[in-house]
Image (cartoon, rainbow, N blue to C red; front, side, top):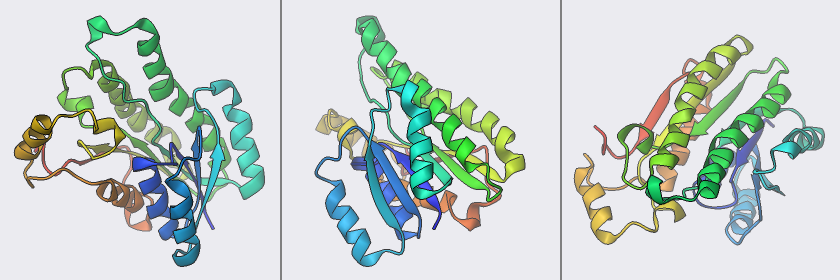
Length: 244
């Protein structure tokens, strides 16, 4: 069974992705600060119905100094990794001129530095000749912009260059690297949107709706499949046509 690490996989979009990959037969290791209430019932469902598996290991991904040992320990426990989904991120909003320096630094640290470092160590585990998959979860605001999300947008835009260049670095090893760019999805990150803002987003979309977690998860699942073996260095937008 191929192993996949999903960061921020204990709830919301990360858990949706972990579930989709487990149903496709992967052994998924969800990493997040705490287990929470949402993962256990999903894990029980997967044990009953899926061909894959879902495990959880607690870790604060802001602790970059311990990432090497984390990945080494997981590789010893489960075997080398085949894939990685960089999903964990902070969605802190705020007008730039009003943001505290500490909040700005925290966003960049967790949304950029941490996933890049995690990718470094997981990639080392993937260098076994079996190929592999890396998917970075970005956001449409990286391209379109959104008032109050300038720093968050910058951190997500960083994934574009990272994805393209890493795809070239890892291509000779048979490892594909892609990004998924969700639109506004109904998760904790969008709970601050007013009904007026939600209605405006729906009105702008070609499909007149907001994408759901399952829509993003299915896209990641596709990029992990053999059908996507020739897709690398690209960004797939899943936003119900909001940016069309």
